[in-house]
Amino acid sequence: MTKSALPAHVGIIMDGNGRWAKSRGQVRTAGHLEGLTAAKKVVKAASDMGISYLTLYTFSTENWKRAAEEVGFIMGLVKQYLRGELNFYRENRIRIRHTGDVAGLPPDIAAELKAACDDTRDFEGMQVILALNYGGRDEIVRAVNRALATSAGTGPKPVFTEDRIRQFLDNPDVPDPDLIIRTAGEFRTSNFLLWEGAYAEYFISDKFWPDWTGEDLALAVQDYQSRDRRYGGLAGGIAGV
Ligand code: FPP
Image 1 (cartoon, rainbow, N blue to C red):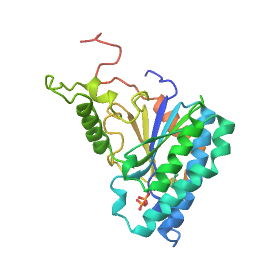
Image 2 (image 1 turned 45 degrees about the horizontal axis):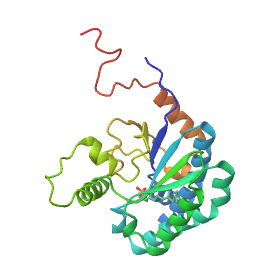
Image 3 (image 1 turned 135 degrees about the vertical axis):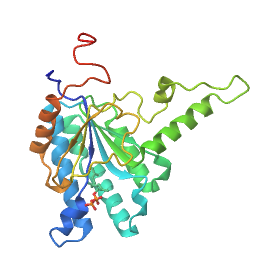
Image 4 (image 1 turned 30 degrees about the horizontal axis):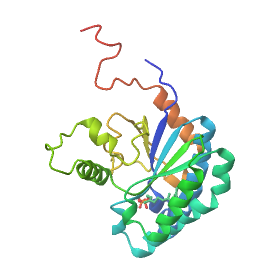
């Protein structure tokens, strides 16, 4: 079995905050609060481990269907995270980025996000990409519309290729995720990195997100390193046909 190197890009679907809270007789928002603490631990561990990109599925295009109080609470946590961790990003040279539809975010959150992205733009350490108001289908639709807008005019009809669509995704310079982790035992993509995750290795953890620590990340990475990535080809090339 081929041992893979450290994954350059890890994506995490942070699931199970609500169930974590319910299992303790607490309100759902208590789970999100503890989820924020877990996110801080995992970001630190990923940075220490030498992972280059970490995408956190923080709020999906579908999450607006939740009660206004819960949505407001999560947005408040995002704000708290972006502001409160600034010293930590500076110390660890962590760059903050965003994927998702910024136009659909409350103006104060969009402004906070922009400030954190601008402030950390030149840091050369790990990049933390917050997927906020993010949907994989929505990202592809926005990319296609951006591509169309740049080719509008009287010329020939634009031809779409994989490369052309990729250029218009939210962060075209970021490599595809090698490893996508989902917590709380669900086997679903839930619209996360649909385009970019085409060949990602999946790791499903039974633990609820608030219980996650750096050790869990290390175990997921270890598991990833035992996988044989073939990208639709055969192990060892075409030998053995
Ligand atoms: C999924 O759990 C979690 C979310 C929709 C919110 C994620 C937000 C955080 C972890 C806090 C903010 C983090 C950062 C990095 C700013 P769920 O509510 O769907 O859980 P359930 O499936 O058990 O109900």
